[in-house]
Length: 139
Image (cartoon, rainbow, N blue to C red):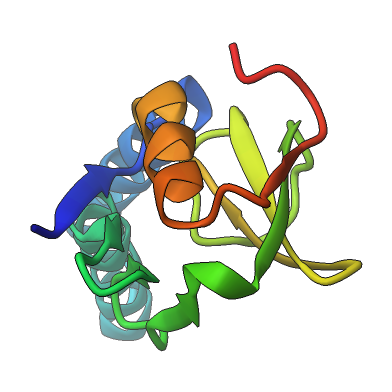
């Protein structure tokens, strides 16, 4: 059976949403140019869409699928994941929180994600691939 983990959402992401929504409302009320209003509205809607559609699925047939809004889905056989490490690396990723996991494919950092329940997520990965190395304790 497939299991879906939603992305944990950090306070910084909520702050971005509030600022974007307030900026959009201010642009409409303040009579800014139509281009400004449209760009702000589209960016705000994309942020909301990311909030609602960022998730990670571990499939029954042993794949990990990472989904984040309009961005291409990432798919990898769990058998190819070599290690998992905890990080707070603030780079662009399929994660809405800085409480992240780095997934390694071989020696290469493959993907940054932020599942809500990291312990269950890692347990399920290890169930599919017991050889996954845990570089840090998952708290």
